[in-house]
Length: 285
Figure 1 (cartoon, rainbow, N blue to C red):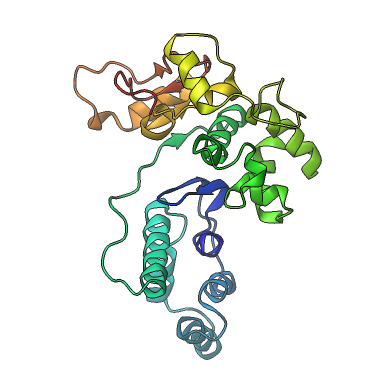
Figure 2 (cartoon, rainbow, N blue to C red):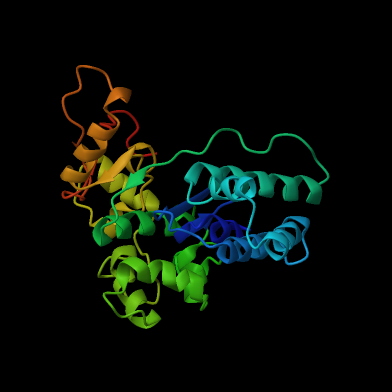
């Protein structure tokens, strides 16, 4: 369902994790290129099915008039390359499926989705991707996310081409061979002592929290075993220049006393990263 909605909307999935009561998705929203009628029809057909009424109506319009009607074109394009529409329709589709499967009705999701703007630089995307893929590790479900089939890294480790291309999009360095990509990515997922170890991920989330609370030294992979609110509620994450740019773009949403946007991730080994919000309470959850 996730892949189908992404293909229709033109959203590129970098990685994701599905948990029992929530999910995380890291996506790119590319600038909408001009789409021909055939390309729009292809997306609709892949999404709804070749024999679906929506697909057949568009096919008939192209055969009869040589093009998709302007009203239909505008309606469909409004649903593409838009994060809010993508999330809304994905959640609605899942709710319909879940309610039908479990003989229930009514609202399924507790609240609107939360989002954070991520600078599209490898070192930034890599950090957020690893944080997402390590969700099942933090939850104590697995020691290695490669063993969790419901996350991008686990799916890629099992050979899924779409999952591999998502991680390779920031980790490949021109080489999209999975073994090369995985080797580099594991340097972010695991500390050096753990890479190649029979029992990967030796530092537990509990132990990582204990070290952080007494202000001990944590490596970046170890810190990612903590529940870091900056990566969930930080509004924007990236270099100082990127966060300042986002601050200026959304300046009206901040109080008049706020002079700048970039804030450090306090107490964490991500010195080059900045966030939009200065979280002083419950930084680690």
